Image 1: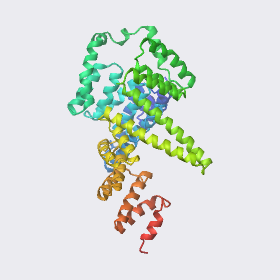
Image 2 (image 1 turned 180 degrees about the vertical axis):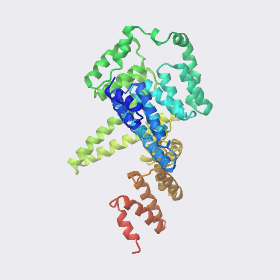
Image 3 (image 1 turned 120 degrees about the vertical axis):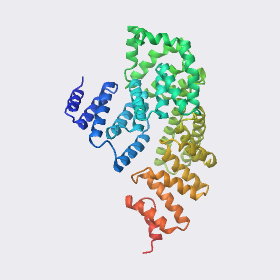
Image 4 (image 1 turned 45 degrees about the vertical axis):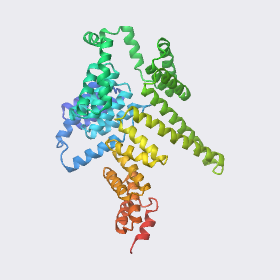
Amino acid sequence: MSKQLDKARAAVKKKNFEYAAELYNLHLKITPGDLDARRELRAASRAHKKLNGGGTGFMARARAKKIEIQAASIRINKKDPEKSMIQCEDLLKQDPDALVALLRLGEAASYANLNEVAVLAFEDALSLDRQNKDALRLLGRVLEGTDNLERALKCFQRLFKLDPKDTEAEDKIKKIPARITSRGYEEGSKKGFQGLIDVDQAKKLEAQNVRIRTPEQALARIKSMMPKLEEDPKDSKTMRLIAELYVKADQMDDAIAMCERGIKANDEDHDIAELRGDLLLKKMEAVLKKLAHAHKKSPDDARIKAKYAQVTKQKMAFEVTEYRQRAESHPTEMSYRFALGKALYDTGNIDDAIPELQKAKGSSRNKTEAGFYLGQCYIKKKIYKLALKELDTARQDIYEMDDSKKEMTYLIARIYESAGKKEKAVTEYEAIVTADFNYKDVTQRLEQLSDF
């Protein structure tokens, strides 16, 4: 037991809940898989919240909304998912009932192979909102991935009851029972998992859960996994894990080749197909970064400039193809709809971008960004009333005048200015200047519009 954990529990007894939460977080940074500590942390944070009025009132609601937006903006660091878990816990320290933060914590934990932590987070989210479809879906996926098929089935059944049009839930409640029957799962579950593995196997599993920190460790793990592929050349799941290890070993081409091998072995494995897409995009980004650096050194070199334009165009076209495939494979995942909509916008395909962005707005995670790009789509289509509506709605969820809110406000001001609505344009420009005097050409525009 760590010193931080001892001190945290002592602080709880003294009802010093805020200090206890800090100590629990320090302990969890070192031991992220400690379920008891996470339960105790959440209990301490909720006790502290209760002591401070339980989060009621206008200011508390505004703070909760801000935390929700911050949580939704967290992107899971797949190389270091524990870092993303820490980000989520920092938000949960402010509000332990921040449902979106709990969902992001669960997602990050599943990437870190801390599936029990993921289950705990999703179940905690469901205790706050029993009908939360995202929590049910994510919990069902983790339970299915860890062979808890009966519990996974219940999650997808509840999800389908809430939304009979959910194609993933419908698919799962058809397929999971067949898997339960074919594997004799019920008999195994009565015996318990301890009866299903021997001591040697347990040691192997323990070794597999050791966190990979160096390229050498990644290559050693790959070597230990290769015999499994010899036994089953169509094991795309193992191929995906090996590909991820090649990434950690900084061998990108080998990772991509392993993904392609996995796709040939099982063309229905969307995970490995998406990993390949991510790696190819990453490879293109690396090429663009090198070209940008070369252009900075030789700004007059036309060949470098042309190459940069060519690779940029290839990347944008690839993004459209890649995200369209993902959106078709996961029709209820609005993050893919948003990615596709943005990719279509970037390539100038505005008419196709608009319906994708409209769908993406249905997710709280993508609502603000989707509205931002949707507003810009309407500007390009010269449908200015709709552009104003989308941009104004999108910026309402941003409490501080950050870069994205400045950009939305600037676009709104430009629309008003072009329409000859001088006073409204001035009001919008002034809102920007108050936060950032040197933003774009705002001060010059204000000077031109000023009556003084």
